[in-house]
Image (cartoon, rainbow over all chains, first blue to last red):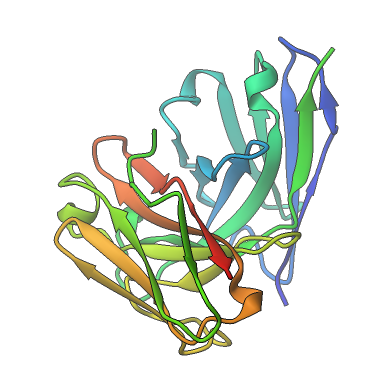
Length: 127
Length: 111
């Protein structure tokens, strides 16, 4: 059974870098059937896609975050990570990691959806 | 402002039917990208409710159904139950943004 677990500091100071890791069990981040992604939800607001990564290291970023964002995958340790630099209070949110899947054999990038989600972790940006 | 537009709230009495709309454009839903729906109940993790416009994952009751037409999609919930109370999000892919997009979310209140 797939399990996704986010980990990282729950408090980050403004202007510093937010860093989270998603540990995967029950599947491999090297599995070419899936993409792996990050989504966040600020308090009282909706879901926002952050970015996705494929086992090859190919990344896809939300344009609004791209200049501050790095997502990486570590297939040997079966995890993937997100780093968001120069954070402000607006980056305070629950951060979820997720596994993306697509139905059917020949999938285009846009066919993938968020099939499984981690429990989420609250990151607060405050001095 | 979200690329996909959903009503902020809908409500219905137990047993009734409600629909939640998701309106996009020619760069996402209208470009023939699929729409997926997620249910986010209080104190839980978002859960895939409908995939690829109308497919229910295993374990999702058939009270939930999805459809898509043109640049819009809809989620219908029949036989409303108290445990359906929560937030619902549509999601698709946008070629202008080159990325995945969510609707702003709809708060369903079961009266």
